[in-house]
Length: 79
Image 1 (cartoon, rainbow, N blue to C red):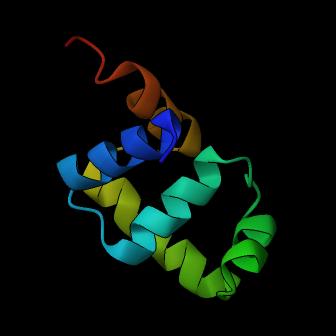
Image 2: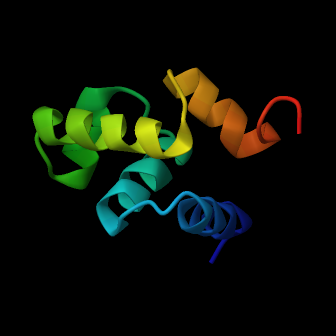
């Protein structure tokens, strides 16, 4: 397991991401940034992907993909 994969697993556990949400988040961290590319890579519909991304946003209390990436790499602002 790479260092990135370990960090993704720790982040997923910290924010109680489901296995599907963890797969989506891991794919994002490994370079698939568009919804179309993510859905294709994971073999799911863009609609399902959008729902799961919304659930990830709720669990992490983020409003954008950029904020989610910031949280992953830097932690909460003000911490």
